[in-house]
Image 1 (cartoon, one colour):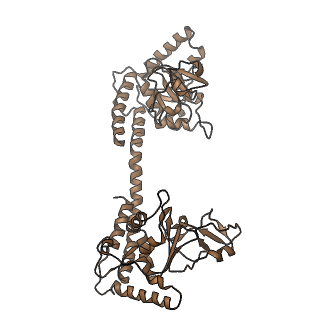
Image 2 (cartoon, helix red, strand yellow; image 1 turned 120 degrees about the horizontal axis):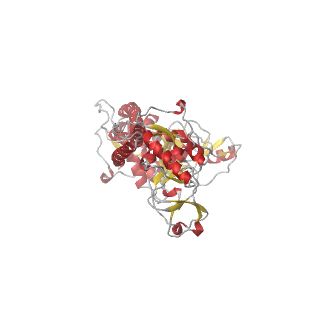
Length: 487
């Protein structure tokens, strides 16, 4: 049960007479109702009300929605009020210099009339033309559009629109209990079920007049209200605690993923094996591979230059068998990519756009160049390339291409040297360490991007190749279980 459901249940207990005990010494509700009836008759005699205001629709047995204690009574709202009406059904003449406000049901909230920044103003003439007899006994309820907003009148300089229903209680001692009644599911359900209109609901004044009030003795009304005032702050606290718990539960899978990825790149996810060929040997093999590519004219000599890593660049400790290396020295991220104009590309070729990749890197769909009606220059990529979005890198749109294709220039395709595990690199790029580093160095406010130099100079932890495979296997196992938590 959430906080709103608990609040609804408490209010329903209250109006069914089960929230506080009955006191046999209480003056029964019938006595107070008789006094209210006499007061209304007096007002008719004095000409302040009309005889028709005494006419109330009889209550039939099949209208009674639930049982109430013997000391209570059922009464229509009309019997408890001197007047029940709404505001003007037209539009007043606005005056930005006027001293009065034109309010509607959306200006009612938490028993108050809320004057908003965009609330229209009217002048003295409009006020005198359309003002209603509002007083300390007035309760206002929204009856058009949003139904059930409640406000009290406290002398505000206002005129009412049609969506603000007002009624003046004949006895101010009823105000707290009747106000509470307006917040119950019982009233809201009654109002909505008897409203007209399909898109915009409207509750007529006749429906409001006919509303059946479960009416306790006035002493019990006060006890009920006091109990509600005691309980609802606790319900609100419960709601806040529940919201915080729900938030934590919603965030837990992603937090777990981030934590596990960080453990992985710090060498704490799987045990080290002393028989593994250390990462230093892997780096030597990469250097040899790059030297051969230089000889073959596929790389330039400058690509062999390595920038030393200073001690203050090392963000955390890694196992002795691992190595720190710059990302650009073990990948082709900065290499020139083949371009093609989409109009000249095979229409059946995969045409990848950023919108096809979900936050976190899940591929949502594969559309061909023809289906996408792609235009402009695109970047070519091959099956097995790592695809990295340099635009809004915090979205972590990173994946391994399942087939050949072309993509927006905002996506950078690259590979790694010497059989480095691509899935390890993808996981590394999604880690908190890399994510924080890159996003602290992006440029552009509305469309932040990461520069190539930022990526190539990135210092990354490189495990032995065998451990890379063990890390990837473990990640697939753990992250799969976390994904199941979301379902």
